[in-house]
Amino acid sequence: MSAPILAIEDFSVVYRSPGGDVRAVQGVNLELYASEVVGLVGESGSGKSTLAYGACRLLRAPALITGGSVRYLAPVASSADPSHVTACPFVLPGTPPPAQPKGHPAAASAGADQ
Image (cartoon, rainbow, N blue to C red; front, side):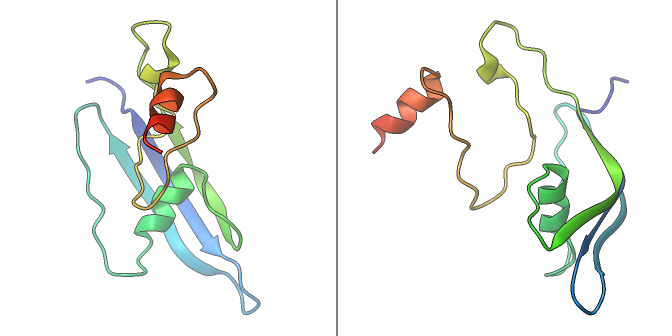
């Protein structure tokens, strides 16, 4: 079997507060393979979004990653076009798409919509 495109191992996140740290994610392990779909299900406040944002290093204070590792295996581009390579496999609802550098095909099409 090939290597996972995403491997999260023993991943933990806390939220710092004056009363002490609040554990939001503790010891999560997850592997995602090419062509596989994984759904995160849980109650409100159970850490689903914190896990996704933390894995992409998009957390803001007072959140703090306290342990674990996240490894991405980016697809190999079949051409010199860098748009074929994805840096983060998570697409988070309500998150605007990343800005593209001038001259990038996606930057030209984004401006056409406005």
